[in-house]
Image (tube, rainbow, N blue to C red; front, side, top):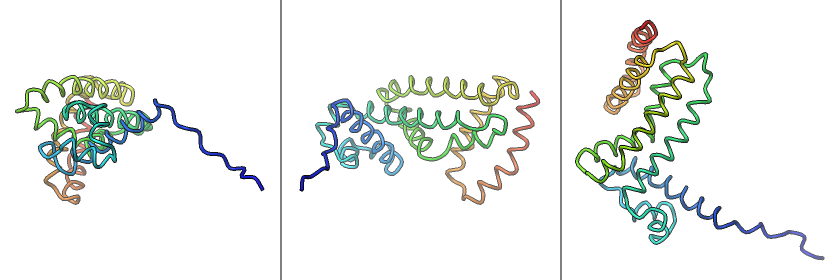
Length: 192
C-alpha cells in the first residue's frame, strides 16, 4: 500500500520572511504593553517571537526600528478594522475604542519615551503623521458631513486624553464617565 499523503509545499523565502517579521512585530507589541518601552529589549522580543537574535537583527537593526514598525503594523490593522464599521451607526464610542487596548498602550509607551530620547523621537514623528492622516481619512469616510474637520480633530484630541485618563479608572468608572460625557461631546461636535 503506497502512502498517498504528500508533504506540504515548502514555503517561499518571501513567506518565511513575512512570517518572521509578523512574529517579531507581534512580540514587540506584547513586550511594549507588558514591560513598557524602558524594559523592551530586543532580546526579549526575539525570545517571545521564537526567533534568533540574528534573525531579529536582520529584519530590524535597532530597537527603535523594531518598536516603531510594530506600532505601525498594529495601526494599519486597527485602521482597517475602523473602516469596516457601519458608517451610519458610528458614533464617538467608536473613536474612543480606537484609542484603547494594546495599540494605544504601545503607542503611549513610545510617546513618553520619545519625549527624552532624540532618536526615538525622530523615528516616531513620521509614524504619528501617518496615524493622524489615517485617522483624518477614516473620520471623513465614517462621519462624513456629520462632523466638520475641526470638530473631528478636536474629537481625536479628546479621545486621546480620555484614553490616558482611563488608565487610572476602574472599568465601572470608565463606563460612568463615558455615559456622562459622550452625549455632551456628541452634541458639541455635531452642532459645530
